Image 1 (cartoon, rainbow, N blue to C red):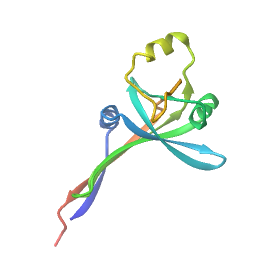
Image 2 (cartoon, rainbow, N blue to C red):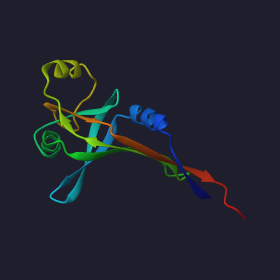
Image 3 (tube, rainbow, N blue to C red):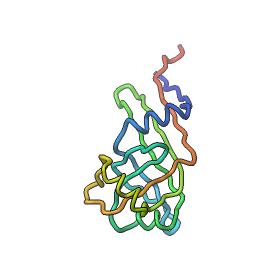
Image 4 (tube, rainbow, N blue to C red):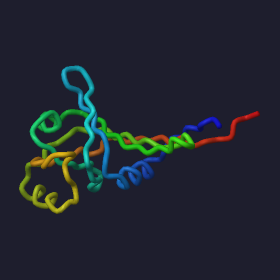
Length: 136
């Protein structure tokens, strides 16, 4: 079998993003990319998650450009998909918005997550790998 790679339309990228709860956020710190797992939710066109003090909150307070990624794969059949979204992180500080977000079913990855962060999606792309019969 040889794998076939295809681009995903934006609508399908958003559907796949909305169907998951665990993703990875890549933040550049001192010139090097650092990747963190986060429990998240797609809230409209925003990726939202909770965090404590540290790198992700610092990046949000600075409005850093980040990449968010989710994927799925089947190692037996060598198939899967990957979706990447980019945008500027924002620390959510507006009282009305914080109150609304408190009802969202999002927990921080391994911590309490005192702060809410969102990434409005500026761009999104995805790929799917399908197994295709090998030409003989």
